[in-house]
Image (cartoon, rainbow, N blue to C red; front, side):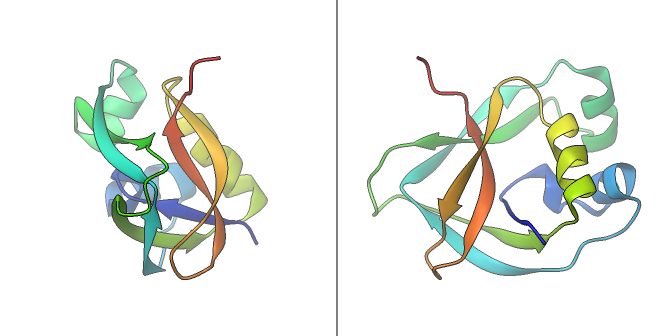
Length: 113
């Protein structure tokens, strides 16, 4: 099953229920080489589900001293697709290795070409 590292609204029970139809259980972990910024959300569905106009967003620094705490969830392939649908265009899904060594997906800021 795919693993997803969440540091923001996908940790909220109401967002999980709206997107996956179930509450997720996960384990705490840390992502290195990123900092957390903010992005304004204008998508009505995402605003309704999260209740927040601004969401956290990962920004890559490459500096291992920069760390972001979060939760690792195991999702089905279908749930991962649902998570993709929830995230707005400012995010891209990329693979990452967490501090624990766990390989997972993360949603980070789209990098300019």
